[in-house]
Image (tube, rainbow, N blue to C red; front, side, top):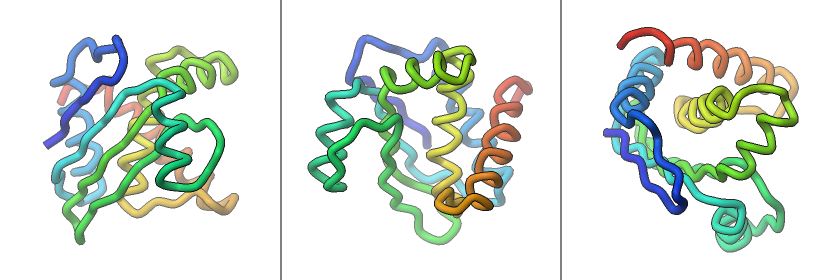
Length: 139
């Protein structure tokens, strides 16, 4: 089950479309969707979590807490919409495209993908692109 929570005025245009897409992403990795919570927030909200839980005093676009057990994918994915907007400008892509990338990124971590080394980051980026394309396919 994919759930969406909002700590800002932002709201996804069609939650069911995003929910179906995330379920399809998880299935495409031969995993099962458990409870996946997306929490959309601002920089201040995510910064507080970063400091309190991770001891990092910086801004980020995403923080995820992974509760996956075996192939049952579960977790909380916090996304700063302000960072997504800034990154979209920096990478010269639309807000929607960058939001899809970050949403896919969080769930791909739960599926076992890492991004610490150059090789891992390249594979993660490739998987993000692959999964973003799935959003535009009728589920």
